[in-house]
Length: 132
Image (cartoon, rainbow, N blue to C red; front, top):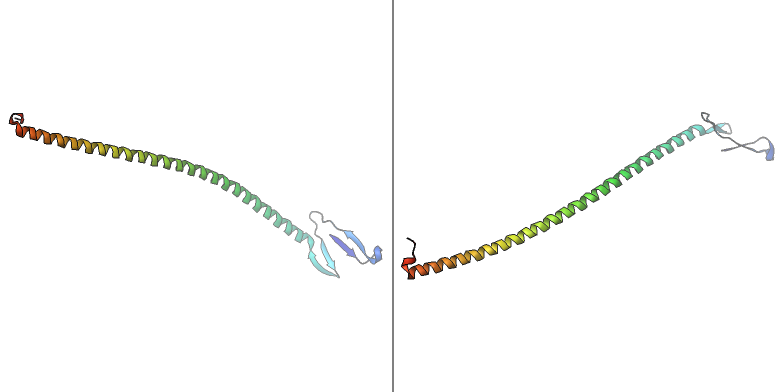
């Protein structure tokens, strides 16, 4: 911060740098009026800056945490997709096996009926073959 006074060298103007020390407040007066309290303003700005840093740090930690959770959820999703595909494959294989067994059952039922019909016709021709 630079304060220009109207006394002294340099054509009646002199510049002096003021650096606030810890715990001191600098008051800037122009024409006898207090313009602002620089120390209080600086403390407020430092406090606000520190709060923003803390919020940024918390947001970064939350972002890292959410990224970890996202990767974990992606892994779980991939595992569930693999399980779903495996279950679908097993279901399709079971459906195919059921179809094969139904076809075999139908074929055997047809063969049994044919044999029963042949047996009946033989019994009609040869009564001695009839069951006692």
